[in-house]
Image (cartoon, rainbow, N blue to C red; front, top):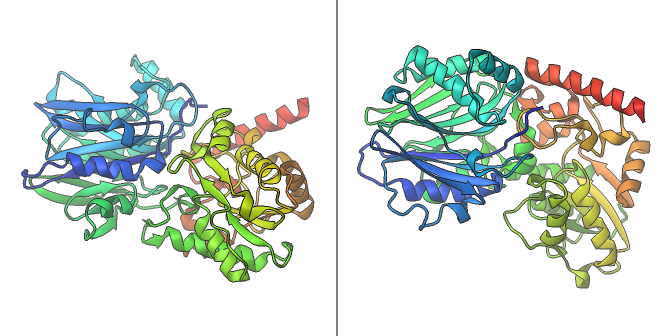
Length: 493
């Protein structure tokens, strides 16, 4: 497996008139996207036929400080928030990445989010070509794919460049690109697994909320799957490079995106509220008179809707987030457990003696949840805990940029040997998971409720981590290999 898997945030801006310094705008958008990163951040501007880059480990708010970006002024810029799930915290892996060349027409900077599923094949190809790779990550591999496209088609034909990338790369990739002449480009892969947006005044960001944070009145539109935006002094051009084949990650609605965002015009907040309502409608186990408690912060909307549907009390201050903007999901073990201990404050005064319905967005490994439940029992002195998850059980690894690449990490799969096309887990499996987590009961959102909550068709979503149906050839092959390894590993034990 590749060492790094990324679910990041990207931003960019260009002033077509060449009069405005866009650096402050891009910095603020990067800060608005900090929930998608936390590992590293950076910014790039064109300068004297090359680029100036400032990047380092940490959140955007800590890296892109006035001191670090002192003197940076430009009419175009890109920024990046990096979330790396495993491997060393190497500052050299922060983005934007730059290709420095003696040939001016081959110089470019870029940032991206996603994951290259066929990275091993691409790495082997580059090694056979004699390419000296500096890192074990897939960012460098994407850079070489883009460079080979530029050498074949030139930077004046970026549509053909990204068409070549689509032919060779299996996975997901949203890219912002900067050329030395100030040209800004943004490309969203044809399956559009993750969001990418733009405004007419040429702001680009992973989430529309980042654009509206700096331009509240901006008309924000999604860059469609397989679509390329190019902005320079000649104007803004949108080109459909490849035929769209939407396979949008349902986790964007359930967890990653800001609740106030829209993903391809579909509200994240509304999807979470609908998920909570469906959970409540299907729940016949939690005792009447229970109180509802959200795991902050991404489960708040689902918890509000659950409580409203049941007409039960919602204790918004039952669990308090002491580290806002920092997600335990994007940390590695044992840091995940330590952060879980630091992140949540337990309000004993409002929880003591109560039966609670604990609503969370999802359950992947169970590490954070197990620690939270222990604290609710000991510190909160609650009488019962009924865990409700606003997404289906995660049963298969993700190879497209979300941090669960191994079956053995998945708590639901460790108790259920299969995947789901509809419904949820059998009652006996739910009881096993509940016992392991030390909760009185547990329920997940059914598979078919996800497209219903989001407001789209199942076939337009990527739910491979639930259904085992991977939307790319390499993803399916890797899943089969992982299943075989998992089966062999279990047989040994």
